[in-house]
Length: 407
Image (cartoon, rainbow, N blue to C red; front, side):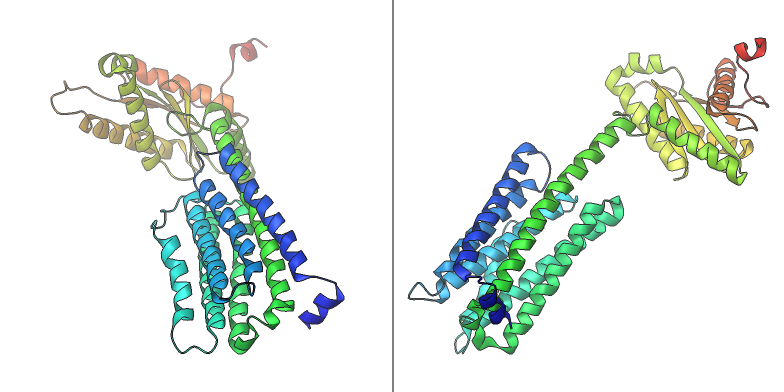
C-alpha cells in the first residue's frame, strides 16, 4: 500500500532525502541560533548538538547500498540517531531542572543499539539493528515525554505539555516500527527503501520541525515566565512585590465578600533595622530579611499572600481568618523569628535581639484594601510605641481618611 502511494504521489526517495536533509539542517541552525541568543539557559546547547547529530544521520542514509559493506552506513546512521536522541534527552532534563545525564551515556546507549546486529549467526543483521534502534529511540522518547509531562504539571506550561505528547506519539511510532520489522525482517534493505522508508523519513521530518518549533516556544515561554517573575516578585527575597500583592489582594477581598468569609491582614516591620545594618552591614541586613521571609513562609499557610511592602516592612493577607486567628498567627511568626534569628548569629558575635512588630486588622463591611491596611498600620505603630516585639489589634470599624471626615 505504501509503495503504491509512493509511486502514485511521485515521491522519489532520493529527492525526499535531499529535501528532508535541507529542512533538518535548517532546524539544526535554528537550534544553534536559539542557543547563541540565550547561552545561559540550561539545555539549549544540548538541543543544538542533537540537531546537528540528526542532520549528520540523515546525510548517511544515501550511502546505504552505495558501499561494499551495507552494514557500515546503517550502523553509523543508527548510532547518530540514537546519540542525538540521548543528547536531546539530556537537554530536556537540564531545561526542566533535572539532573544531567552521565556524560558517557550518549556513547553507551548507541553502542547498546548496535550490539544486537553484531551477534554471529544472524540471518538478518540489519533487521536486528533496526529493531534495537527503534526500541531504544522509543524508550528515550518515552523518558523525554515523562520529563516534560512532570515539568508541565508542576509549572502549568502548555507548550511543554504539547511537547510531552509529541514525544509520546514518537515513542508509539518507533515501537510500531520495531514490531513491523520483527514481522518482516527480510524487508529491511529492500521494501524498506520504498514506502516504509518514505513514511519513516516523513515522520522524522515532521518530528524534527515540530520539536524545534516547540523548543523555541518553550524557551520563549520560560523567558516570559522569568519576566513575569521579575515584574511581580521582590528581587531580594523572592516574595510578592507591592504591585502584585495589591492586584491579588483585591481579588481575595472580592471573593471574601462574595462567599461571606472573614479576611485579615498583618502589617509587619522588623525592629531596629537601622541598627542591624550598622552592626552587621547591608549584606547582613539582607540576610536578616531573607531569614524573616523563610520563617514567614513556613508559619503562614500556602493560600496566604505575603509581600515585601517596602524596606523592612512586610504585609500578609490571610483569607478566611478572623482577627483572633490572625493575631495568633502573628504571635507564632513573631516568636519563631526571634528564636531562629538569634540562633543564627555566629559564635563570638555580641548578642542582638532580632524582633518584629505586627499590626493586625480584619476586613469590615464597606472597607477596601487601603482601609484595612491603614488600620493595620496604625496598630503596628501602637506596637512600636508600646516597646516593639509585640502584636496589636487594629481598632474596630472602617478606616476614614481625614478628607472623608471633613466631607
